[in-house]
Amino acid sequence: MNLQQPKILYQGKFLHLMQDNSWEYVTRPNTNGIVCIIPILNNGSIIFTEQYRPPVNANVIELPAGLSGDIDSTESLQTAAERELLEETGYKACNWKVLFSGPSSPGLTNEIITFFLATDLSTIGKGGGTDDESIKIHEVAIQSASNWLADCHNAGKLIDCKIWAGLYAARNNARHPDYI
Image 1 (cartoon, helix red, strand yellow):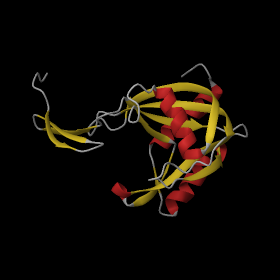
Image 2 (cartoon, rainbow, N blue to C red):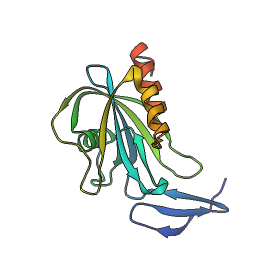
Image 3 (tube, one colour):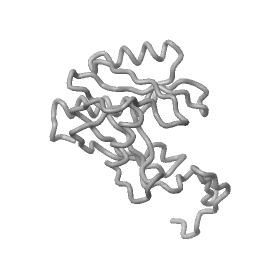
């Protein structure tokens, strides 16, 4: 156990590079968590987002997601999930359920992601993200999602690994709603 405080090597607006003995990692200042939304339409389709991500120099297929507490430090995780779903997709959900939480990349960052299942959706906005985002929306039948994602991969797009966890949790929740 290390009793020494980690050293800040770099402070950016959204990331801090830290060093704890020989371990280097990244923290997210000014946030209280990360949210990831699994939006399921009444017709059984799931909503994916697609946007260009500079760190990987590619378009990435993702679930709607974002930071909590970056705009308002008192923002709850569910309020952040509601905001991100509306900003990115234009949808509002009447039903929300926390499915699970866990570290996104524990060897790299302190981020903890909370996955929400969002159902009973209605369109109330245009989506597409905020001013600095250009997000495309895809509505895909959940039964066809694996094949659709394979097609996206074959077309040169990257698939965010959180999608697979989200699909598993959504499918498991549908069979056993009280299991997760």
